[in-house]
Length: 159
Image (cartoon, rainbow, N blue to C red):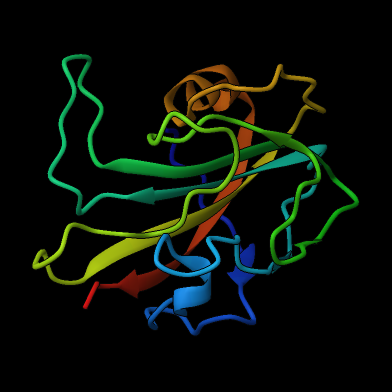
């Protein structure tokens, strides 16, 4: 990804920055995405994308990707500044569970606490990307148009 320093902020009413993600938003609970809200997008923002990635998952693929992808959501219009809990709006990509939409945290038992990076990405282009892109495909497609980004990190461990 490009270096896109931004004053944009991302928050959730479900958990504090670096706080524990409630079980409701995990594979052990209702498996619904947390509510998210952002502000201060860069001037020229025409659309947004949201991703959730677990870099602590000890997975490296043959193509050089790493970690575990839990969510890719895109084609979010510039006027939008929040996502409701369990949202089904906008365009969902495929996660590493090979399912479309959000798949909540559920690290292997005994694996300790993992960090989950929820990213908001501002784009200088209105996107009309097809459904079902992986996070890596999405990033490849939007990379030239990223003008700002920031993250909210939550943690989760099983047991």
